[in-house]
Structures are given as C-alpha cells and as structure tokens.
Image (cartoon, rainbow, N blue to C red; front, top):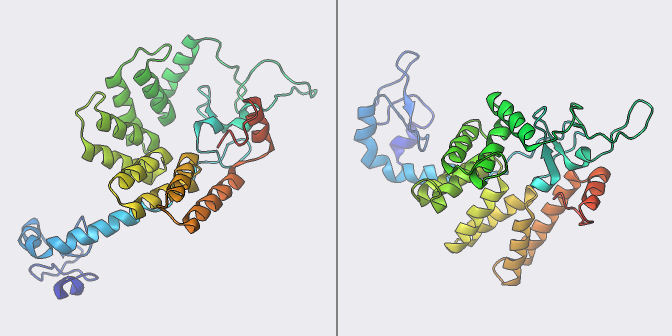
Length: 309
C-alpha cells in the first residue's frame, strides 16, 4: 500500500486531491477494497492507475474472507427446537402453514385428548389435515407463493423445472421463481441459478455467472454449492482452496464432501490431520442434529443410520 493510501485509510481525505470530507460533502470509499476515499468520480478515475493493483489485491482478500466464512446453520425445528438437518431427507415442508419441520417431528405419532393415536394424518404444527390430491397440493403451493413464501417459490421452481404432477415442465418459469426466491435470500435458489448458467438450461452458458451465483449460494449456506466450488478448485489444481470449501461443507453436514475428503486422503492429496478434522467436524454436526425421534424416523425409511444427515 502506498504512503498516500495508508494516510487516507482511516480519515476522511480524498486520496487523489486531498480534499477533506464533512457531514455535507461526504467522501465515498472505494467499493472494491474499502481502503481509500474519493470526493468525486473524477478523482477516483484520475487515481485509478496508481491504486488499481493494490485495490485488486485487497478486494481479493476481502472476497475470500467473506467466501470462506462458516455459513449460518439451518434453523431449528419449530416443534422440537433442535437444529434441522441440512439434507432434504431430514426435513419436510408443510404447504398448509409454510413451516419446515424435522423428519422426527413430521413422523411422530399424533394423539387425541385421551392419549389415543390418531389415524388421520395432520400437520404436526398446525394440525391441518394432509392434502388428499395433487390438485390440492398445487393449490396450497399457489397460495404460499402468493403469500411470498420463499420456500414455496423455490419448490414450485423445482417442480416446473422437472415437470412434476400439476406442473408442466417450464424451464423459463422455473428460473423466474428461482430468481424471486434468490432475491429474498434463499441460498438453494442461488445454487440452482448457478447450475442453469453452467449447463445453459434456458439461459446462455456463462461460467463466470455460474460461479458468481454458486459463491452467493455458498456464502448463504448452500452446502451443495460449496461442494461444487470445492470441486472446481480441485479441477484447477488449487487443493488448499478446494479443501477449505469441502471442510466448510462437512461442518454444515454435507456427507458428500466428507467422502470426497476421504478419497483425497486415500489418493495422497490431503493429510491425515485434515481427514481427521473433517471426521471430527462431521461428528460435531451429527451431535447437533440427531435425537431419538429422528433415529426412529430414519428406521422407518429402511433402517439406514443417520438417514436424515
């Protein structure tokens, strides 16, 4: 960093012309690096050649700091108040009330006031009877989308993408819904947009845009996007960056990344210490999400241990 840049890092002086800022004439920081301030667009342009190299270097550091932070965990189940597992096997979305609940609570028996198990299937959260037809499911999703429910937008987008019952295949509509969900901050929607740009489903293929959306998805908590970024770094020969991505995904419960780190260890690309850390991280995650009811639910799916993870 130049002397001028250092002198202007913590005070309101234009790095190009030396003009001081005040409450009326506020200076604007460089958007990319946040290191220097300018009084005008003209001063920023005039100073660009001097600052460009340092700006790019600092911007890359800030970008990586944001990219490689451990993302926020999944929300707690609104019934048992235990962290919801990451993968879809561990939770279910209720179109009646818009709640996402863990599989343990979703499959737990429901009893009447006399303690008798109720045969009728109802939502464990709002006690609304389960839908009895595809038409009823579609109507419920429609209402949830109209209410601005981000998960409903994302789900209907997936149904339109794949052509599920009640939703004719419509890639353009799917992408529109993914964008709506992404605008509301839903991580998995960003991941799907990135995939669309990567494969060119209904948009022109654009690797740069695909990576941009994958990164946003990863930052917001999409383990699938995180794993994809790790795989791309591995293909590029950037093993340190790849391992960082895989380790973050493991900490969020993505077992695919754990298996991949195991393979990298077997092939001699990561150390035993790295593999041990990944195992410990995954076990810590399991400790946060597993309980007796979820184990019982896993057994009902065929006995696969930790199925919800």
